[in-house]
Length: 162
Image 1: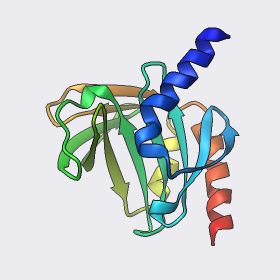
Image 2: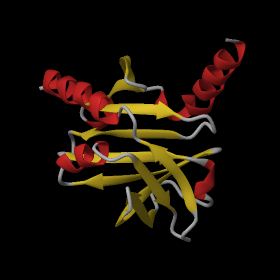
Image 3: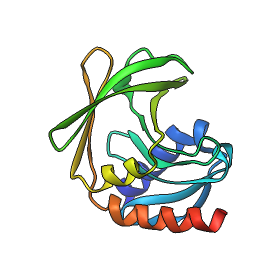
């Protein structure tokens, strides 16, 4: 139990710099359900992995789009607001995308936006998403277990924001 508490505290500390504005709506199927006022009260799900990587899937109501964000130390040199070509693999199917960088000191991340908001749900129907950086390095492989169920809650959350 002490290890779990230490892990949770480490995760909270590591992510506190960029998540202070998020509104927590509970924990569902391995994901935190949250609302992001900076994205027009867009709902999202977020999870923290053992290596303190953080993944978000959600809705940006200001741009009427969906997105996923990966915060991970393996990104390498990322500039806040920079554009980066990345590749992500969904159960063997590869997609090329442009990610927007976020660099908050030790916390580096990249966000990919989708104008087809339903693509977020397509991600959730898969088992594993592997993300590769601009140099072709594997940033992380994401187990998507529970994602589909958690996104059901995010959809309900989003309807309540209207």
